[in-house]
Image (cartoon, rainbow, N blue to C red; front, side, top):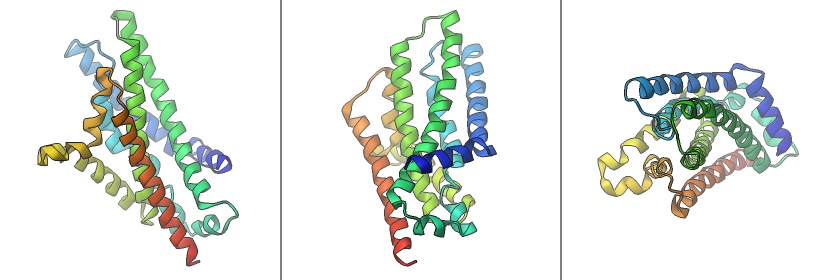
Length: 226
């Protein structure tokens, strides 16, 4: 698992993928930071992550769209499926590598907290709660994006399938109030309020685990017919 993680992490850092994700996210985050400070006179670090969740919807698929789709298209997937490593270790290794890029990005957002600290008194406790919730949301997104990449050989299809699913989650509560239970965004909204509840944490983790397992099933089935 860790060998796969190192290999994937190198591919993110020695290609443009990881830098594109971090760069686009921080660029758009900076725009919202500027608007929040100078247009709305807001000194709340946590509120920026409502916009961060919007950014994530369109940027997270950049990390996941090529996880398996590119290897399937190029034919290198056969090497993975026939290697002595288990499918589970491959899946978890790829997800961990993407998760590390995500954590690096979150750490970099702390510079905005430092800036706000120079001019106001943002709550560190609420900021950490927000970052934790954002990590769980991102992990769920990455797991789904990885699954989407495993069922197609087109990175473009994987991207739009992932982004489309995330957008749908945004509008589920508007379609029917009962569907709010299935909206990850609605669950994330509690974290910027400084609230960490077991139900939200379990839901995010369960969502991620579900799509990790589905990805493993997809790959195991393809492996069985090789």
